[in-house]
Image (cartoon, rainbow over all chains, first blue to last red):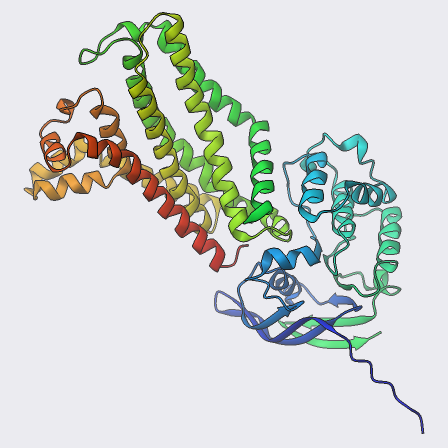
Amino acid sequence: MEEKTVIIKESLISTKNLVKTFNKVDVLKGLNIDFNKGDRIALIGQNGAGKTTLIRCILGQYTYEGKLVVMNFNPRKDHEVLMQHIGFIPQTPPPLQMTVGEMLDFFSKLSNTDKEEFVKIGVDMGLDVEANLAKPFLKLSGGMKQKLLVALALGRKPEILLMDEPSANLDPAARKVFFKYLEEYNNDALMIISSHRLKELENLATRLVEMDMGVVVVDNEL
Amino acid sequence: MGKGFLYMTELDLMQNLRSKSFWAYSFLFGAFVAVMFLSGVTESQIIGFVGLSRLMVTFMQVSMAILPIYVLITTVRSVVGDRESNVMEYMLSLPVSFSAYYWSKFVSKFLVIYIPVLFALIVAVIWGSLKNLDVPWDLFFFYSALLAALIFNFLGLGMLISSMAKSQEIAIGTAFIIWLILVAFLDLLLMGLMLKMRMNPDLVIWGGMINPLQIFRTGSLILFDPKLTVMGPASYYVLDVMGRNAFLIMSIAYPLFLGWLFAFLGSRYFNRNDVI
């Protein structure tokens, strides 16, 4: 008789009946899902499916009903502590006024990370960090901004990486380096990548989660 | 709040120091002091006052006209502006508490608004000393504190509006309407209201004294016009009920308290609702 091995994965993010409402419209409709240690999740779904809302709930930026536990923390009450374990890459780079040099200093101090960690990833992705130190982040091109945001998120080496269309602004060469970094990233880390480009994630993702109208409609191991 | 607060404040200060509007604002106050000296304000008299006292009184009148609306307009956009531009979504994905984010904005704004004003007053004192004018130190210290209280007050109000407003347009519109109401209810309108409606004068005057602009105005007058003659009959009520020294203390304590209360309510709202 064939012996089956049951692997119980440690849950890093757990939702129970998670509801988020905007103007009396439920955008998340009682979400029940666990995201585990080591999962590389391709989070897909049409616009308005609730992907960004879920990410913002995990980041503690939205109030919600139901239960949401992230690494045994409450994202609202324990925001500062929890964010030390989370790296986030937004879909649209924010119009930050600070210079690249100030950003590196700020992130380095805030996360106790050597600045060189960020610089190395930035350079590997094709961003000449040294030449742009005095430039405001706002004045960089879309691609350069995204490369820096990727470097700042990965350089901190967080246990959870939340990425909302992270490669949208990257050129093919940078995209290749970016996915190589993700593939070689800590095996125990949880990655949630919200993307419309599923093909890009086929070598990386270990689990596919599809959302529609605020609920999970597909949840498959890949 | 910890190191997140310190780093955010430092970052915000650096951004403010780089902005052209900060230098334009600083230049405005510096130039104003220079113009007052060059135009001979220090030689003219007001209720027997000449020299630096005269200059400081004029400085306070101008500050009362400029500072409240300037503080409101520049502050109300800070939180809601970051929210609309996705800056907040990104910054609050970092290990910074909501309170640290909010109060770092408050502190850095206070410093970049107050320091140029204080610096202009200090320049006036130095310039006056070089011209052998007597320095009214009591006036200098009191007016420095009064200006800090005025800025603190409107900063708190601006932060409250900014944390609650759904858009920058709504925030600016609300700030402008509140400022108009506060200006309209300075004593001129109050007197008219009192006469027309035959209301209880105590009620009307204390209603007026709720207005931080009125407190600032009266506070800046009371030091060189102890009987508040320029205020007319209302001065009797103020001085009888409170007395000069108590009023001097209140004119600083009340706007500080009000500013703190507004800012605290803004912080509470910010902490308890969707931040983006």
